Length: 110
Image (cartoon, rainbow, N blue to C red; front, side):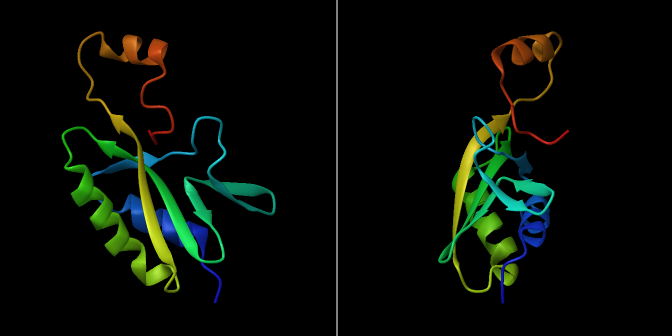
């Protein structure tokens, strides 16, 4: 049974400490489907890769474990690797402009 990248994405995003999925620096991390892609999820013959943006102050190993547990039912028994690509920085007065200039938080879901 093939792995559904949309189900993997939804399961990962259901974790409260996941702010979004990351497509990588130039969008290279994705599963390509007819007419669209699922950013942040890469499926190979033996592995499911999930590239996430974690929330500020999250315990990153715990977030990765939570994502693995959340996606396990939809991965068909494949190994799951979780990569923390970025951390969502909380909004502070004037912080949004600085972050936009630096490109921080790229790949995060609004």
